[in-house]
Image (cartoon, rainbow, N blue to C red; front, side, top):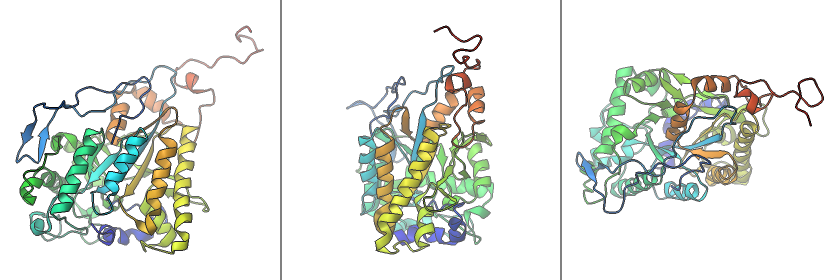
Length: 420
């Protein structure tokens, strides 16, 4: 899982990334603050029965613990500010960033989404088991794994899920560009890729020989409800395939900071454009895109600029956060990789943002699953009303009037105003 392997597919998108309108998506915790929203019960108790699935790579252990119970907004109630931190190609390697950010999330009332790459659960010597669309068996633009990497990744995935985080998928070979890239894949080819990504997670014990380790504590056929495509390519046909397979959301697009809507039956939870300090254009909420606009495709640029570049990303994400928090309250979606690009400055930036925003009043740092659950629980008319608000726009007559359907109270001193 070397950095150079992970970004190989993203290099072809450099020109598009430079315009900040494309992303490279190569590659906990206590429950988030709920206010009036309680957490569902159903965590597996010590000694409870575990029902193994298939070869024992996964198991049914009951309802996922630490999931918030979504509640519908009351009439006139101001919506919470949702923030989603998500990780592409999530896996644990020698950098130990997966385990680190699990701890960061847990310490800051956050849960996150980890998009697991299926080939990170497949050993190098078994690479020919992977049959990528439009490529020879065993081909991949990112690395496969070894026994230690698979064991370490399985441990982090297991703990992350038990802490309330979501395990999505980043598929397998991370093919981008015009030569057999995911943007050229048909609906059926996407279905094949999805099936293989699921299968590598469901059979990691057989493929790795690590049969004495604990299973992943979930049924991946039911757990997997969303994804982000490599380099944000191939979204059209992926969404068609995903909607037929029962997925609930997609995060493969680029959007402004507005309230989401469904697309082909899936919630469109795309990453967004936020202010880019020092520039006149806005930037996608992803570490890779900040890097490309700072050091190009070099993953280690000028060390004298590392701190400045990290501050740019941190401040840009915070500007986007406060624009929503003080404005239309649209969910903020952030995408990252477990990489030490430019000296790890982007990891520092993300950690700073988590610490600043996730402990604020009315803020919920959640997974995509939790956001989709909340959106599904809302009155469709309320969501339609929220989508009327533009980027950073606060309702002119206040939230109570905007979401109640009742006229705002008349100002004091005019006919009809309440008496003092």
